[in-house]
Length: 245
Image (cartoon, rainbow, N blue to C red; front, side, top):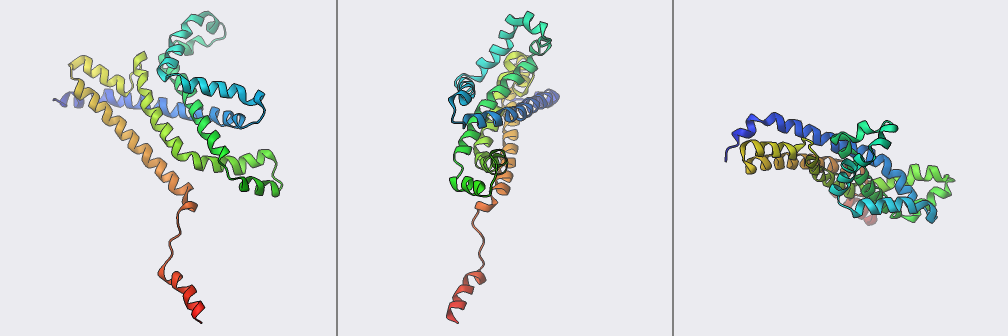
């Protein structure tokens, strides 16, 4: 094993790291923007309201991410004239944007389902208390349901972020030089698969560690009210002394 070839080509891995971070962060931001209204539509009781988002979520959760990306990247070429007529072909002809669209649509489906489950697990007492205060439905969602749902959904969403990071490796299949793409280039140049792919794996491992640390900090802050209170010996003894008197 010769890891000097990795040191000599570290710039390629840095480029791949930046591309991976860009794809994951942008897809998560836009995906969350799409997921929130879809989750709200999913909890509606009218089938005419929840049917379309349910079909969307079922499709993107039921098909592999690689297939979705191929449908966008390769399939868009069949509609080139139509896309060109509306000025969208310049987006679909670029592998980067096709991967970003596929990642966004995929993570939006999973995130919407996570938020929907968290909303439906909201204790009924919180809703009743909000109604007793005279809150309208939009205020109820904005002040009670969504903040409470986000706190409960945080651990599951942390897993989705990690899965999205790992799933982004499929971007290298459509010529994007991400972390895995950098490893494939190094392997093709030097025929050193172990060094090339273990180095890419270490970068993914480092990114996963950062994501886990960030979500733990958020959980400590947003779930602080769920942690048991630290009770000193003096506070424990105080009621006993009072009863003795």
